[in-house]
Length: 509
Image (cartoon, rainbow, N blue to C red):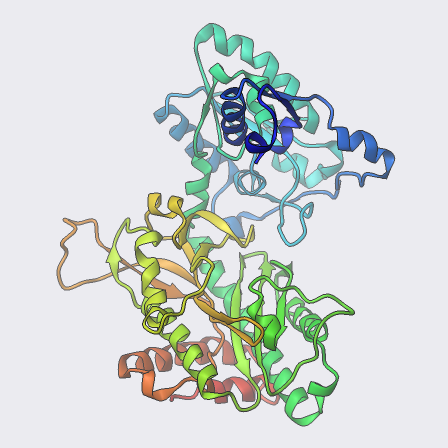
């Protein structure tokens, strides 16, 4: 847009902290092709105008994530990063992504809503580790945890990188900087002293250890109990207490948050709950707002996409329910979405297969009648970290073709269908990538993988159009529901609405 709408020779100023080095290089190249340039400015002009009205940067204290949840000490993680840096023949790594910092140091924070991260930078070299983090975040427990790690003020990283650039230039050494790092950091180091590439932490973090995987399974069981209590309560309110005349999308979302927070180890939500009825469900990332939200209606579909942050894991689940009598068309659409969900869940594939290759499995039942959904089919999920995590994913984005699945990764399975102005359908489970045995092994020992769903919430049988459902799909659903019952029922009050709801919804077809 800039190169198409500005005259040749234009110099464009930009705050280099707000654009990645890769984006900056592309824009600068495009401007220079028209005799222009991209210029880094030292002080953001908007900030000058904003002045004292600009909100201050959050300074809430960070906290230590116990190794009983992390499964590996931060010193062991740093050692693994250093091994990778040696293989890559670089002098060190500048860590800028907040979830990478939280994972590396086994620390968590609350600076970003729904994401347990904190503002910081870090530089890891062969013999030093420096964490750039403001004093206010350092509790006594965090200081003790970081023993042996140099802690410097947050803003000082730019000056220190500039100072390091001289030594790097003289020794012809380079620091590795992740692809999401800002142009400002690369400018401070000097482009000739930098290798911009994927941070090794991205993949290390994505491959969950045994403790993290156990935590993911357990937190989803507790989350399933919260969801059972929620849908048991909601159904009772709508069908017996006249709640469809008074309950709004926000009201029920607040109720779900309350029930989640009652579960052990729950810290909060992993994102703002998508609680949507009828036509609002067709808005893929709809978020109800007080004063403009809709009331629930038993004659319309209800889509709920929600998740929680627990000390031992992160959850993300979507279910679509109808509390009245769905139309045949609604049932057909739901069934086709479910067929795609099951097809992806049941997939067996060679170790290293990408989500780009697997994506059509979730779409074929919709494609058969000319339908589709315009979002990715799956994303990685952090371990008490960001609910969206890479590098793996299922979808048609180009970079998904570059990352193959490996055991220990997490992925969501969330096909959908959205009919504008009418309804939305999405069925989402969080899954773990696991090894599976096959009769033969054409991979010469590399092995085969499949998905293990860890989300423990029933899928509504009433919305299934039986004539489209195969025996194999029915067997899958019955087996899944039996697992949900076995792992969640013991966490519920046997005299409560959630227990009775779960018992009915997990009964075999």
